[in-house]
Length: 434
Image 1: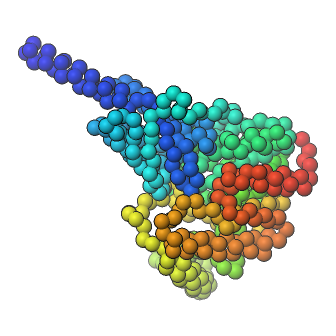
Image 2: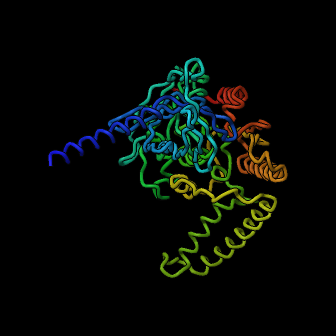
């Protein structure tokens, strides 16, 4: 019995020692570059912890603020981790010499990412944080991360695109804080903000827009300018329709797409399909009985014709597109919840600036397939030009600026242009009482 006990303890220490060795060989700082249409440098720090490992990740071209690796495992040279804040995951293999990790980062779409061990002068520096942060309650059991970049001028609130947190503005915001008092808001479902269940009911545009207004009220901001990137256009349009008295102006940074302004001539497949689904729910048995079934069916017929035309157009646009190289990754649940929570906006009751990238710089997308790339570029050009025309038609008083050959993240790739247009627009807005 004593012999078996001693053997058990020996086995325990052998396993503990082996785990320590595994942790030791993967522990350290790793750095690599991922191409997501633009090249972003990523740093991962891995440390030993309680017989296992823990870590954090930096996207230093976006922010100096790290995010925790929420799940991390390493065994037999295989490393895997996830980053809940970014709805991303990584799987890679450590090289025999322990100097590189070759793998794939997945954030909706898988991208190759090779990490190298950061050593001495070759290690990338992590910039200092340019802001203070606080958590602000905006709804029942919902708090948002709000960054304060400082400044003493009129208030300017920055809203992010889908998949980002407010730290995406860590390099852009300081360029504005010399003139304005700048804040950044992380949308619910992302970053350090609360993450209610990922269902449409929790992420409607009304919820997201009211979240922003709650931040404005909590900070006691008097009619701030609100600027938003990409999907934030829907929050901007919600505020501009429902509470224009709360803000001085709206700035759409490549954010003026159908979720922000509906094209009454061309329609929008997603919004129209969502309406069609709702109409079907009313018309079919088990749905909410309509007050006027004949009127409901007439509307359903009109919606069917509209969505049919949009589906045919989309199918034709995909004719020259190659099939995906592998199984298509499902959209993150929070992204689906937000996209299906859209509504139709056809006006804005506040001064507005729309900045578009057109044609978009598509980076390295489909460089190895010129025919498919040409088809994608043509489709992008038509789609953007249609939307610009819709904004000019639906919101004729808005100011529209087009920056050619800019990336969708044009506040990075064309920073000087965006700063100039924002400053010029804000200069036209009436001063607000403090």
